[in-house]
Amino acid sequence: MPLEPATSVGEVPPVTSSSPRQPAPSIDEARAAAAGGAGKRAYVREMFGEIAPSYDLLNHLLSANIDRGWRRKAIAELDWQRRPDGRYVDLCAGTLDVAVQLAATSGFRGHVVAADFAEPMLRAGDRKREGQPISPVVADALELPMADGSAAGAIVGFGVRNLADLDAGLREVHRVLEPGARFVILELSRPRSAVVRGGYQLYFQHLLPFVGRLVSGHRSAYSYLPDSVAHFPTGDALAERLHGAGFATVRWRPVTFGIAAIHTAIKSA
View (cartoon, helix red, strand yellow):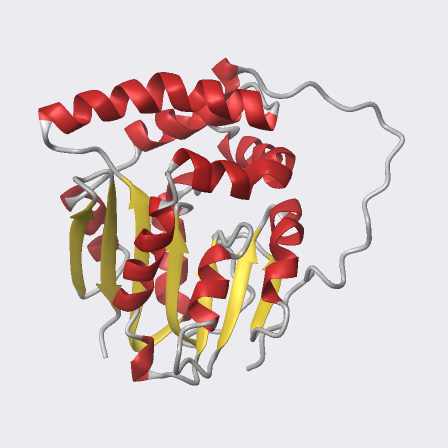
């Protein structure tokens, strides 16, 4: 069954409106969303739509470009060589960094469906996919427009903690994967070392929000980021959630002193 998205980047007309611009969400709203409040979905969608123009710059600046290496490691875990011509899903695809990196990997002959419900993020990264087998699709990770068992693998980079319902999202990925396929999660984590954690918290709670607000002009987005990491299950807790979603084999490993982690889950063959 072919992919039949309700909308795609190329089909969505430009948005025009004479309505006055609404004020950006407050830091209190960001904290409530990070904690999983009822307004999380709406906050996340609006926030990423507003920071899309500066997202790539800040992503690489605030991570000192370490994020590029993390993505390479996550893609290696996907084991796409099992099905080099298969269809792969990049969830919460944002500005397409993961999709482009996967599609450009030597030997890859498949197709990448890059799904995100924040259309401005997909538009901001659209220029990167020129000539690449990538289809950006405006779609919620909780309700993917794909048939059961139609994907050879799935990957998400720094997006799974933004899901309004984590368990529903994990089950949805399990649904669209074919037997034996892998799901790889690259996500920020919390270092175990007290020394590393101290410096990390200082940077993450104070410097990062300041720089983020200065560059993006958004008053709450880079306060949401550290708070969302603090509320997200990491390590063994996330592994248990993956098992609960139906994945048979789950493993994870920290990277860069535990600042981030890579989880790999395999659907039963």
